[in-house]
Amino acid sequence: MSAIASSGKAAVAPAPKPSKTARDRTSAAVEFFFRAEALLVYVFLFLPIVIVVVFSFNGTSRNVENWQGVSLRWYQAALADSSIQKALWNSATIALINGILATTFGTMAALGLQRVHSRFRLAFDALTYISIIIPEIVIALASLILFATFRDIANPILATVQIGPGKPFHIQLGQWSIIAAHVLFNTSLVLLLVRARLSGMDRTLVEASGDLFATPWRTFRQITFPQLLPAIVAGFLLAFTFSFDDYVITSFVSGPGSQTLPLYIYGQTKQGITPLTNAVAALMLVLTLGVLLGGQYLINRQGRRSGLGDDNPIGLPTA
Amino acid sequence: MATDTGQPAQRRRRASLLTAALLAPASFWYLFLLVIPIALVAIYSVGERGEDGGYLPGFTGANYQIVFDRPAPFILSLELAIIGTVLCAIVAFPLAYFIATRVTKRKAILIILLVIPFWTSFLIRTIAWLTILGPRGIGGFVSDLTGQDIQILGTPAAVLLGIVYNYLPLMVFPLFVTLERLDRTLLEASKDLGAARWPTFRQVTLPIVWPGLITGSILVFIPLMGEYVIPSILGRGKVFLIGNVLQLDFLSSRDWPAGSAKAVVLIVIMLVSITFYLWITNRGRRGREVSVL
Image (cartoon, rainbow over all chains, first blue to last red; front, side, top):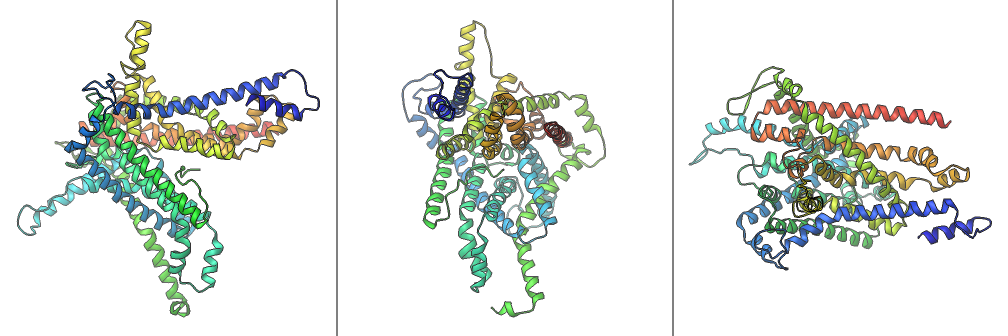
């Protein structure tokens, strides 16, 4: 690279000098520094992921750092463990329902916001950005206060209502409160993704469709929706993985029987990392990455087929 | 087509009904899971603790008094958030510059490689550092090397490492976006006019990436102020930040009014520091623009 850089410079210079100038040498040094830094950062970012996956195959009986050959025993143990199964089921259910709700609400809001006064839109946007940027723990404790207040008001009332035999209905925190709290952040996320797509959309097609006497619904179904689809799918994938991986909000608003995988893993680390924890963690990594990369692949294929361009929707919604 | 020829007033009403319906679910969520909960936090913060950890209505400043009596977690959080943001910027800038100056295809690969760890479980990636820094990892290696018992886990350094590790992409992305827009001919022009590297960086590059740097700093700083997973895992309970205090107040000692007061203080610190930061950076920028002219 330094050779290319300096030869390029030599071609520009009126008279090629036999020795490199000081400037060329600094250029090469700076380029080398950038390369080395980037390489180090990428190693830094991927090292922990590699460690988790590698150590999950450790055949050791207890101590995680003692390497005793490659084995799948901890995967077998993880999949046979009933509390892990339950946690996996909880996580998947919560993530799926959250993903569907947030994607629907976020897409609807993005479409609705096009049709309102800018003053209302500004207020709405403020709430969207606040819900995304505010520390998760603030959302978590505020949601906990809300749900607990709701529960404490509702339960005495419910206790007086006797429907059918048995104990009266009783509200507890659980999956519903986790989903409700996750949907807030994820609706904002989907809203921003879909709106970014909407603003980059070709309006002439919508106008043409109107000129051809299509009903608004048909225009939406045949023109707008297919163009928004990549952003909607990306929004769903991000909402799903966020919810699947979330620890902070979930730990505050979970209830009896609603333990998720991140809660399980966090609980395990109190006793130190075991190969079992690593196996569960590796399974989680594979699941979320699989969902994201699989979705990305589908979006790209769909984009190529319909000629709508293959942007990278798993980029950040910011900027 | 019947509606098209129908009364305009009726059509307008149907259109605004549709708008309302489209916005209803998100508005409901914003109102009931953002505005009202935060209002409840403010109300709880002046209330009193119930016997079994609940909330008793009241109007007292006692919960805020606790914050000022024991400000250590707040000061430490602020310190670590500032140092963490600066470290992220220092590490992110060369990387963002490197990515932005690659050819398109390589650029896409490098960005995807940055996105992948960012979207894989935060918790798991942080836990992985326990093995790396632990007594059988780097911590043990350093101890063997120096012959002393050196613990990396449980120190602010370990927490800072976890912070830079987790928040770095949030700094790289906005920097990358602004650097990508950087017109290379400006750099050439500056060079042709005889400016050395450093003045070119300071007078051409920096003003252009300034907005990206500000966005990145805010994206890193705000969530960082409330961080509690990293200090509890890598800090081993010895590095005590606001997030840890909030977690204790709400989930262990169940003193919700006290916790609410701390949450309000956290929100106020964030608002004040961002306003101050934007004010300072805008002022500094205006000053520099004048000096360039």
